[in-house]
Length: 232
Image (cartoon, rainbow, N blue to C red; front, side, top):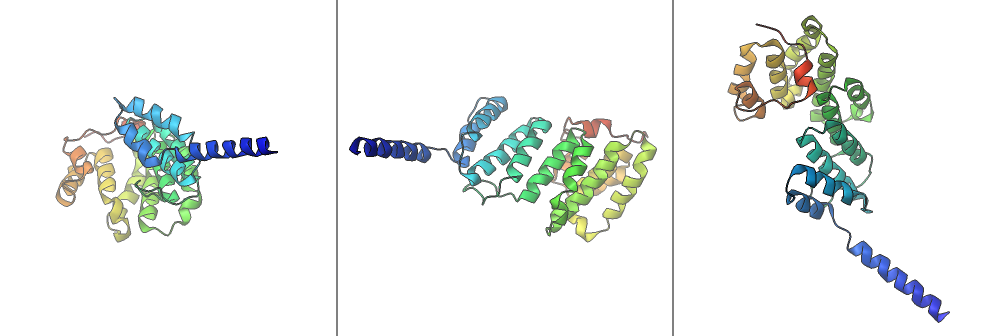
């Protein structure tokens, strides 16, 4: 009996010790950024996230992994990571960027659109995120709905309806949070200089203004390369 209790106690101590040694999302992210390149960082995070047992740490690590994957245009992988994070109900991990499940779904939608998977994007937009009470989330949903429509277009004439909606959104105060993206989309598809001018005037330090002025390159994503554009 004494021997049995000793074995149980040792097993408990070993398990407790292993749990205490489990890395946090913050530690994993800090270790990842010290890697030689993004590819190594992604492989490291992928190996570590599988070992996590604390829901908040696992959720934050998946979200961080999605960000890494999206930054190197691994959009399909990023979708899976963001969706995995969104599916974990937990509080925010200490030291990590706070993201709601709704925002993580929106991140997945953005990546789906970037890689041209508009059907996947539409499925996520039609999920529970549509009932969000967050005005910025709702504005982004409306923007991404029009991006879905643009993704479906095979010729410029088929972009006219979503472009009309985007032009209308410029006048909606509720769409102010995504106005730079709306202006960029209108300029990119129509080639009309007034939208680029508006970007530079209203949002001079934005990435969108940088793209319009040629100071920043547009992401090498199917959405931007294959959406029909007007030839001037």
